[in-house]
Amino acid sequence: MSNAAEKLDAPQPYAAELIELNDVEKQLVELRAKHGTVPDYTTKEGYAHGKASIKELTSYRTGTDKARLAITKPHREFIDQVNQYAKGLIAEIEKLEAPHRDAKQEVDEAEKRKKEERIARLREKLHKEVTSYLDTAVGLDAAGLAELIDAAEAIDTENYFDVTKEAEDEKARVLRELRDQLSRAQERERLAAERAEIERQKAELERLRAQQAPAELAPGDVATTGGTAFSHEDPDDWEGLGSALQDVPSADPFGDALEDLQGLGLDPSQAVDVLSAIQRGEVRHVTLNATTGA
Image 1 (tube, rainbow, N blue to C red):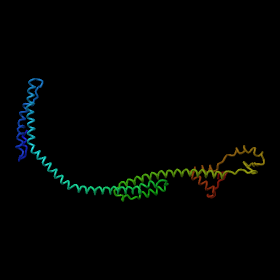
Image 2 (cartoon, one colour):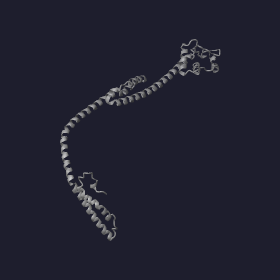
Image 3 (cartoon, helix red, strand yellow):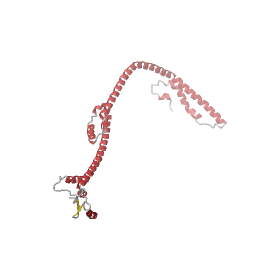
Image 4 (cartoon, rainbow, N blue to C red):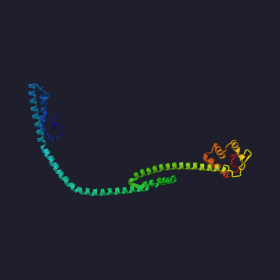
């Protein structure tokens, strides 16, 4: 190991102060040779030799530490002096700086409050102009929801400044919800229309069947089957009516016609509408006959 004084760049203002430590460093070689091996302390000779090594090494250690303290004392005192001096100057500077910082903080906090109030007003505006569309949507049918969606899509979010991103996100959320509501409303209305159409078809079917059915015989009327006349006034005529009617096949002209029209490719609703039109005489050269179905 080279001397610490030799490591200092020229000029060496601290070389003289390090002479004592340099002497210790020079003696390290001898100390290592003399005390580098730990003796067997379990033997009397080893114990005595080790005790002597501890005494000498302790003396060198404490002496070296005393030299360090003596060498650095003036420097430490100077450092303390510098610290106290600088702290006093810093305190005076802080007295000048503090009012500026206080004034700046007051302005900054005022600006912060203004910004927070501005953002609160913008968020209130956002709720009234965008979020409120969801309240307006309550109870609307599909057509009303479609118009509301068109209006929501036209919302301009550029004038929301500090909360522009929030406005864009809220607009997107509201549109998603409105479109979901529109989809559900369309499905409800589709199912309602289907149910109404089924009820209409059933009612029309019953009406047409009722119109095509033969009227009940009044007292004194005559019923015929197979060319045979049956009178209410002649009970004997009615005794054979039951067996005679059994030979006549039951007929549902409207049902047969409905089945034929569906067989030609019309759906049930269309088939009912066609037969209704025929029954009302709106189709030329075609009539419904209670007996033949044509």
